[in-house]
Length: 295
Image 1 (cartoon, rainbow, N blue to C red):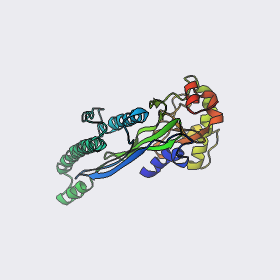
Image 2 (tube, helix red, strand yellow):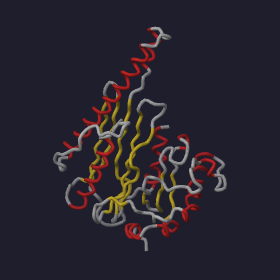
Image 3 (cartoon, rainbow, N blue to C red):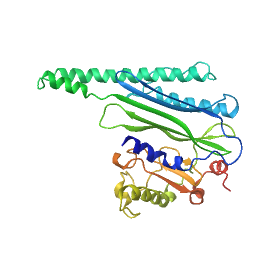
Image 4 (cartoon, rainbow, N blue to C red):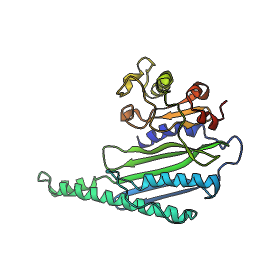
């Protein structure tokens, strides 16, 4: 289930990935590693602009901020920061990544060991199990896992889209996808762009959302039509909400992705679909149409 969830959420971007229509693409470097402790596993994939100057440097800093917001709260149920923000030389990529690698692994390992010790005490104190059964139960205590991923998925002369998508397993019934979804940077100023859809567009976009979700569920759940697609959704109102994650520009249109449990059951994955630009254009902000070069 782990990889099918991530694949579903990333499908729109991965299928339509490009290197840019014109202009200079961002020069980036990708950094990967796998680390483990006695109770935890950390996988890390990060793609960063190579320079910290100009608009590329602003994008680089924005990506580091995303990395910080994900890894500094790793395995924190209370939303408490587990280690300080990096305050070293931001142009020293090796030092920057080593800081987050080592601190994230230490924080994940600390939480995993605390969880293990708590479970261990319950197991050892259980009067209904013999020593052999207790030993087997201790062997089955799950490890913690965090797969961090922040990589460039699509780029044009005007913008670059990065995918922030992490897989997290903290010893429960199943893991889940975390992260910030698709993150779009305006290459003209380096700033993160979020305001794609007009504030009053939700109700007039209902037909498009129904159509997109019908296509998703029909591909994944069989006989689904626009008339019965709401039966697959968990909604508090008549209107289908827009996803919490920002939509992702692709070559063919805007890709909308809902997080796990946002509108449907865990088994439904992460509903995702593309609305072509000619259909979504009336609902875009002026700033979004300018960014996407839509007349």
